[in-house]
Length: 149
Image 1 (cartoon, one colour):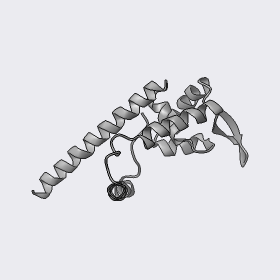
Image 2 (cartoon, one colour):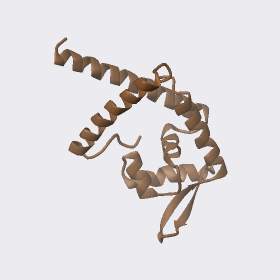
Image 3 (tube, helix red, strand yellow):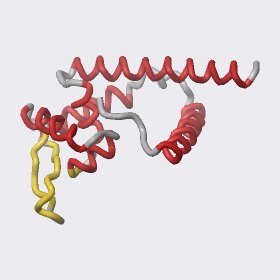
């Protein structure tokens, strides 16, 4: 197999896995009654976070996070509170319902991840290392990951 054919297969496999993960993510989010974008935000809110920090985590413009925060707040999943270090900055803080939903999202997306469930622990560690190396090199050269949405 030539490098070009091997690379084509690698890309095809990554795209197939990406599609499977995205489909599962969208399905779980829908079953839990939230949009995929709101689920991504909840999934990444481990602790109170300034909206600019969430924008960086989601790799999107800060202006997009305002709409995301509005939607989460209207559903009672987050509140906006002053950052104790800088009261001019608002942090997004999960409510009790937000924490419950985040826990359920994580359980269904991480613990029950169907795309990875058939790999051994060693295979998953190896895959994670290779993906991390590819992503870090890409990010160093191109300055970021996938965008919001």
